[in-house]
Image (cartoon, rainbow, N blue to C red; front, side, top):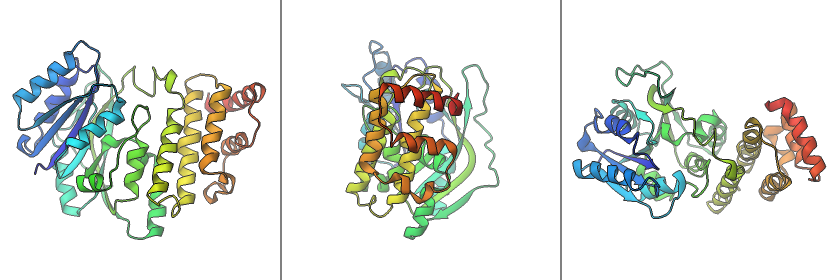
Length: 345
């Protein structure tokens, strides 16, 4: 069994995949100990991405697995396809335009084994196309630590601990493969902001979470990234992902046990965050969008006003809760937008 499987979704990636792969095939853990799963997500560059992927599979047949999807599944679907082929002891992800420090897999695997960790979380660093960045001589900070989650009360606290870093960025975590496969944890497909279906579900299964205080991942700030442009037709995808997540957690019988915690996360990262995405992009809500946001929130959490984690709430929280109780019309949506502008713009 390989030590690490790394899944790399590729969509029209022929111009930058080489730089990503250079860092992966030179990992200090040893190329013989890893498998690199390159997933062509139905690229539209006349076969350039697929041809490059096939060249890598031919050059490194014992390391690279090439997968070509017939239909575009977006990153969630591409990652799911990669996971289905993965056979390593641990799993991680890398976007095709990002970079991984040369020592990353070695350091993560060593720490995972030493502490018997289900997840090892690590730091990342942003970079732009013309900026220099160091991929060698990784320095560990003084905040590395192990967090154990053994009781229901500990898990409730864990769910709300540093929630932003736990919920987002699947690519800055190193997962025990058996935990993912045995519990059939998957990403949302055909949607953007797909990660919570995977990353939040993991929080209910892991018992040993290790934080490694090292910058091991280099995230490319692209002018065309999901959170910056090109998502006008996916403006409410975020809350739909959270609805799928809540329904899945109900099937897994976690919603009943952790109702208040899940409701709070849904309010904060499903409903409120979706509103912030639209506002910060300088866009206007449609009536249908606001009605959908309200409907999806109240469908699962009709008593969200009573959530204990929202007892001490900000003025913005109060406004967002008020919207859930309003009649949504053209006039009220205009008022909502005008009031929220002072918080987001």
